[in-house]
Length: 134
Image (cartoon, rainbow, N blue to C red; front, side, top):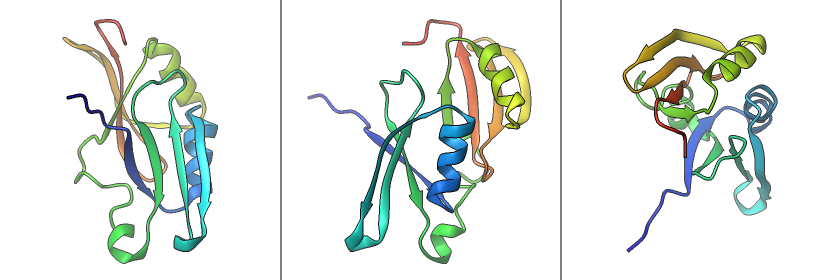
């Protein structure tokens, strides 16, 4: 049997502001942006450049309960892990675009890592593993 995770949903306040951050600031690629009239929503997926892994679905919150999860889907833990082949390149580029790092770079046994927050406060690890990124 072979299975894989295809898409991970990230609850956001607004599609366009999320796209501005993920595509405009982080440099992700817009994969799909399709309007679904029956549900009055959009299917918006993005991925880091060169990625072969799961897509990130930017899912607009509907209602109070979903809205309360924006920026804190994991109770304050790091939610997503962005691997890179050049930590210092990406760290410098993100900082120059105003990305807020909540934990500064650190050399760990597994690689170089820093934690940044997206526009809603969702925490991400920017990580260059010691072994090559696949």
